[in-house]
Image 1 (spheres, one colour):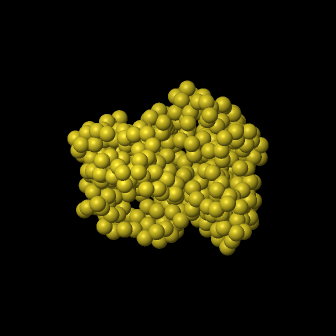
Image 2 (cartoon, rainbow, N blue to C red):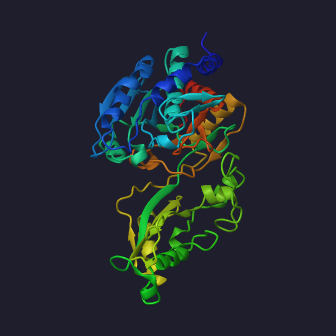
Image 3 (cartoon, rainbow, N blue to C red):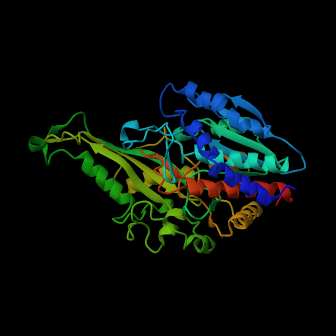
Length: 462
């Protein structure tokens, strides 16, 4: 007799037997660096050769699509349609990874060879995002094998350009909106707030990257002969940046201060952990005064200077540079008007006497901010399923601190979006020595198997 308990035990066995690790090893071995030029053949091979053996037990149809945007990687759509009267679940993952940074990994580790050390599995993509979509695909297979059917319809999209800004994803979804129609997005990316406790989030912060440049003249000029006579672009840029935030990082641009940190949202996130101890120590006096650390990272905006330069930092000379540049970023929540981010900055700089500071942001991808009501019926259903599987109350977050192309699913496809991340903050995502935790993967495979079981066994929540 089929049962939810039997399905959960089968999910556990995939990890305990080493089958999960073997599958992940094959995925990691494919060097799907989307930031590396001329890697299109490898990106395509992941979808045509590496993934299909894992998909065969699903009995699904697969369709490979070229990216409508030049330079973007292909898409794979996985479909299993069982019953038009049952809900349709849309899921998503990305098979591309960030640059390998091979020379920076510690001795004994290499990016595209899975290495196990205790409970850690090292390799590029182990956390972002190969293990995460593998877990969800294996959970679907487990339910199907135990029950004989899913009990719902499935559309699962794998893209190969997320690490380059998901180029073409919006156009692809607009073009194929009818085919991608579903009732809800349930997907996995990003980290849990605490490795030991499941996290559910319903949206993401947006991200706007832009350059600030002060250009005064061609070339550099001797600081003895010209010091005190020529304006220093680096100093002008430093003071302009200082006008954007105060000395503790609190944002001073009025339009960049969101209006969406309502009492209800504050109540939800106030006491959530801002750190699980796996990363650097939090600076308690940094950021917006009067907010808890969790409110600052989940409910507020943050401005960062990602890089800046003037002259030649590694080989300085006694000369006043002709220009200075800083690459900056605003992470923003719902309640920040996206179309006014850079115009508002322009007005702010002009008002404060920095009309010589140029803003260049046209070439950077802008992720939108999204947020679903945590009390939406699908959010409640997912939470109840996770609680039933784990016996614990998960962390419920209105939006992730990071950014994902969630707006494509929530705005273009019009889906409620619920994310269950299968990584943790200390995973070295986007850095050397990327890894995942085997106990976390085992826990995630159990809870996703339980969730897909519950969706197929019950009436749709909306």
